[in-house]
Length: 395
View 1: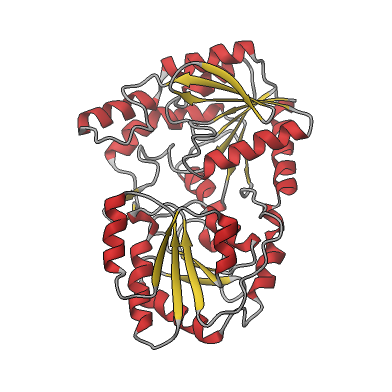
View 2: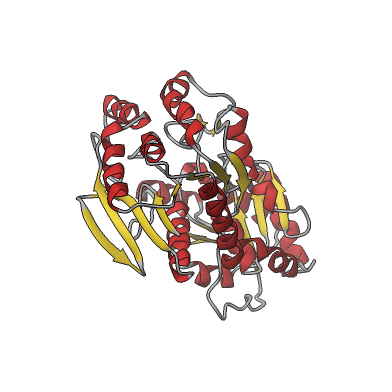
């Protein structure tokens, strides 16, 4: 089978979990004897290959490169999003690649920079479309549905206007897959993907070999790993550490990841005098082996925090905020605990009780490892291959 993957970015530009997931799928399909071609954005037109996957990079057909983090005036951002609602020029470039590399099925993921206009190009060539929802791009220009420090309960006028072409284009999709039930149901509730077969497939992850659990220490360790940004709730974790410290219970908090330097400095200032250490960028396999608990304090409705299933695969239970797809995976008292997003005292209470109970006091490590089978690469690949075959059968 010839599979075309379309995603805004691709290795080495692994901006987030979507890029890791697309790379994993493309390389896994090649290992199984299929052909994979990734169509992605790049500084210039180029063709290359990585681990058997053909990579077609196309220059951005918009007013600036989305990887450019320099400040932009509001009018320029609005223009970018307006063009990205249905970018005919960017989509036509994708169509030219498809004419050369004729796919049996296309798997679209994050399409910012190309826009949903790529679906029209695929439909015109009668290529079945499988689309995975990984954020709120179809509903919200900033992809997060988060404003004023909290998740949006409804869509604002800007989201509705810019989202209209996207919503209409979802009629062309044959199969829509959510990386959580939460994000799939969110889109279906707004009437998107009316004709598509719907399914949920969690992302895949396999830890590196020989990753033993942490050796018992003097103090229980809690850890956060990932992008450090206001929506991620790291400030809530630090505030919780301050409250928990007053109990006299011994514990330590490790924070791994990077982000805006000024914001991180402000967090370090807030954490002064607390048992909190900032590690910078760190590999997951080196991080989880230092922990007794992983904390996922997201403030926004994160569809599926990659940290959760990474943690489970390493046998580390999770304390997560009850937002987005997190409650689907964290089972209260079995493989972790849930708390109200932004509620530092509640998080502190959970941390104190966990620290007093000691490492793996309730056998949570075993529960995490038992439930990790749904993230196994072979299982996830099999689910996606079935989705591709079902879509291709509709051709």
